[in-house]
Amino acid sequence: MAKIVILTGAGISAESGIRTFRASDGLWEEHRIEDVATPEGFARDPALVHRFYNARRAAAAAAAPNAAHRALAELEADPRFEVLVVTQNVDDLHERGGSHNVIHMHGTLAGALCAACGARWPAPMEMRPADPCPECGRPATRPDIVWFGEMPYRMEEIWTALRAADLFVSIGTSGNVYPAAGFVADAMHAGVPTLELNLEPSAGTRLFDEARHGPATTVVPEWVAGLRARGA
Ligand code: BJW
Image (cartoon, rainbow, N blue to C red; front, side):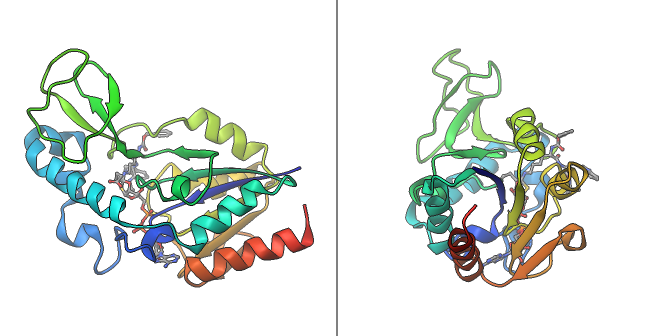
């Protein structure tokens, strides 16, 4: 069975209507990263950070998975392939598109986390700074999202899967944010073939063995169909 590790980023959800970060109309044009995506920003102005993530939670709930999400789910369902999707995205479009084996390395909009005691629970649609933690009662609830300077989730599991993979594929990510941006080099050092599928060349595009550029809803289903036609 061919083992495939697939890294996804904001680009795979763009055609579902979810904004990316670094485009000219991206989220970072309207928000300073250090205000909404760092623990220091949250400590300074938790209401602003909750407003940012409440709006994104609503946008994600209103969006539907697209042909690229569904194609990855079809690949996972094919018994000739063992597929792990490692997503930087905090939406749940992979799961709603039918994928089961998904790691959210940057957390998820569906989760709440107590900054005081570390308890986790399902996030309501609207979170507010005064919401008490169900475990310790303190008003320290935050979205369960990995911000700059924090350790992404399940890294050992990801690196183990990456080193054992037969193929690493990166989809819809600009390759600007580490450690995800380093996966192509990690795969290369482990002798794992690499493929980029992105709208345009990413920051690390020259490191990939092969790159195909175009919208995810075109290039991902085409790649999956080709792979399944060839077999493992
Ligand atoms: C399409 C498309 C279509 C569009 N079809 N494609 C100096 C050097 C190196 C590293 C560091 C450094 N200083 C600090 C660091 C570390 C830092 C970092 O990387 N900083 C960089 C800015 C330099 N990283 C961290 O702090 C991370 N933690 C960490 O490193 O811990 C220590 C550690 C040590 C050792 C091992 C492991 C860890 C944490 C990073 C947390 C990132 N968080 C964010 C926000 C929270 C989540 C959220 O709110 O959603 O995550 S930042 C933001 O960027 C978000 C994304 O997941 C992430 C990546 O963005 P992505 O997905 O690539 O989106 P875009 O917009 O950049 O790109 C979209 C792409 O899609 C583009 O290429 C388009 O062309 C394409 N596209 N439409 C196909 N239709």
